[in-house]
Structure formats: C-alpha cells, structure tokens
Length: 455
Ligand code: BES
Ligand code: ZN
Ligand code: ZN
Image (cartoon, rainbow, N blue to C red; front, side, top):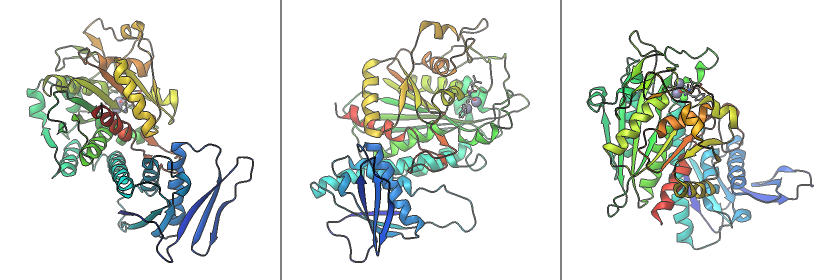
C-alpha cells in the first residue's frame, strides 16, 4: 500500500531525497547520503516528461533498496511538469510482481512529497487522478503476470467483477451457452479448445448519460495461448500466459475513468478464453462462421486473437450500440520484431479520432506508431473458400491482423493497438518498469477517453 502526503515542510528526522541536475558533460555523481538527506545527482540536458517518471521511480527504489519505507521526496526540480509523471514513477517504481511465495508480505509505503508549486487543492486533485491511473496500470500488470492456471477466463471475469464491485459501472458476464446464443462462432472456435470455458466480459460505464455516443474498448483476453494445433515452439511457449494484455489495459483504463468520474460513456468488451489443443478443436483449413455472418477460413490456429476480437467488435456494435471502436491486443509477433519493446503499432480508419489518440500519447508518454492501410494489404486476406482468411498470404503480419479486425467494424471510427511488443518486458528498460507485465495501454486509453469527454 502506498500513502502519499503533500507537505510544505518534511517531518523532522524523515529520510529525504532531493535531485540535483547537472550538465551532460559533467560526470555523473550518483547518490550522496548525508545523515538522513539523500542527494541524487544526474546529468539531464532537457527534462522530458518521461524522464520525470524515470527519476521518481529511481528515487523510490533508492529507499526500497535501503529498506526504508517512510521517507520524503522533493519534487522541486520538476515542479513545472505534470504531476502525473511523478506519481506514475513513484507507484510503478515500487511495483513488485504479485508472487505465490509462502512468505510474501505487503509493504506499507509512507511517502511525503514536498517542493510542489500551486494551489493545494489543485495539486491534490492532480495527484488523485494520477494515483487512480497508476492503480489501473498495477491492476493490468497483475492480471497479465498471473499464471494461466490461476487466471482462467472464469477467474478473470470474477476478478473484474470484484474490481468494479461498489463502483458505478455494470459488469455482465456471458458464459459459453450465452456466447453460443449470441452466435459468436469465431470466438467459440477458439474458446472451446479448452476445458476452461470462455467468458464474454462486458463493463458498462455511463459517465455522461446525456450523451448518446458510446465508445467501445475491446481487449483481447486470452489467458493462455499455446497456438492450438499450430502449436508454438518450446522456446515461445513460456510467453503463453501473457496474452491478455489488451483485456488488462481496457479494464485498468476503465477503472481509472470510473474512479475519476470522467464524463464519457465507455463500454469495455473482453472476449476471454484459452487457446489450447482439444481432440475436436479447430484446425487450419477449417471454415468457421462469426457473429457478423461473415465466414472465415482458418489459415493458422495461432492467429486466434483476431478471431475472438472480430466477434467482440460485432457484439460491441450490435448489442452495445458502440459508435466508435478501439481494440487493443497482444496480437502479432511481427510488431515486436518491428519495434521491439519500444513502441506499439496502431492502425486507424479515422483521422479525427486518431488526432485525439496522438494527444493522448503526449499525455501518457507511451509510444505508438501508426502503420499504413493500402488496398494491397486488404487483398492479402482474400480466401478462395470463405469471405476472409485469418492469415495473410503476403506477409505484413501486423497490418493484416489489424485489417482482419477492421473488416468487422462496419466502417465506424476505429483505432487498433497492437501491444504484443510492449505489454511484456524480460529486461526492463526504464526504472518504472519491472520484469514481466508493463501495463501498456492503460494510461493512453485513459487520456483518450478523458480528452474526448472535454470536447
Ligand atoms: N498472442 C500471439 C502474439 C504474440 C506473440 C504476443 C509474441 C506476444 C508475444 C498471437 O496470438 C499469435 O500467435 N500470432 C501469430 C499470428 C500468425 C500465426 C499469423 C504470430 O504473430 O506469430
Ligand atoms: Zn496465437
Ligand atoms: Zn494470442
């Protein structure tokens, strides 16, 4: 648990960290400790927002490694920058993966922040907002880090129900029978490969009842992706549990939106299932149907994400009345090959909507890069047997995966986020990351919805 207090003057005797910035040419001095006072000296040319996040994460880690959990940090040197970055840095720097060790225990962090300019109530408001976003990111990390045998689709539904319990958002969970009644055959083709039955999880938040528009945030919730009959190699199998980053992102973002009472109507739709091998599970060459009525030729059972998302998008439009769609998924290995863990890939059908998205990225500090949609790419999904194929016959794996989903969006404004490279890190690149899940997408989705609520 983290307890943050804003103070003018730090409590007597409390360990206290201040930053000292020097020019790039000077030699980095690092950490100096004088009694209870810590000074962290680091070269900074021009302080970017994400540097603040990194430096604050570094700061709390200094205390964590000294086994001090009651301390103060001066934010004086960053005062002109949005507090959001400092708060994310503090929360995410202290994040530790939930573990199943028998001696695991939670630490209580008592932190004072000083050196802040501005009206007290305004500062507190900014801190509260940022704290809820950070909690959303942490929820997302925990969901993705959870082992597949602990986080079945049913368990994911329960976890999400618990998260929104007593909050003004409605959670509805559809079981496999109801999913069948809805006609979600593409979702079921994947979902029925496992003994752990699929769930469709829907969260409705009416932040602005006067407005008719509803934005659907659709997140891939595959709790275990073995590849199915197109079985993954032994080397890539250890990553199978982390295929619910999209579901984690939409849930974490909605949590922050609800807690911060953002005036926007948002419906989260999560198709959650496992992709395993069963004796009558779907195989390459099968032709399956979908909720939209479109038929799909299965080129590869490991391209399961787009199948379940296609039905979830149709559901969002037809049953939830969505007027705009965002989908987010750990969808393709190709995006990780393209951008590594640095950036995620996006596609969009709507320039206006995408402008808002770019603004959201400026606020969140996350990196996304928009990929082109050429007609030639669409043709790569042509099938002789069915309306569309779930694999490309010409490469461009990230773009064609997105375009497969676009085929189900009924030409509504749409943004697609492929976070397969950024949702997980084996070697953290920043102080605010920890090995494992990153919580990618939460903050950008939050700001995307918040901005459009202010228009
Ligand atoms: N969940 C994977 C994508 C993935 C790969 C996520 C690596 C995280 C790390 C997805 O379901 C998948 O397997 N995609 C295939 C598609 C291919 C068979 C067309 C891929 O990218 O190899
Ligand atoms: Zn797969
Ligand atoms: Zn997958």
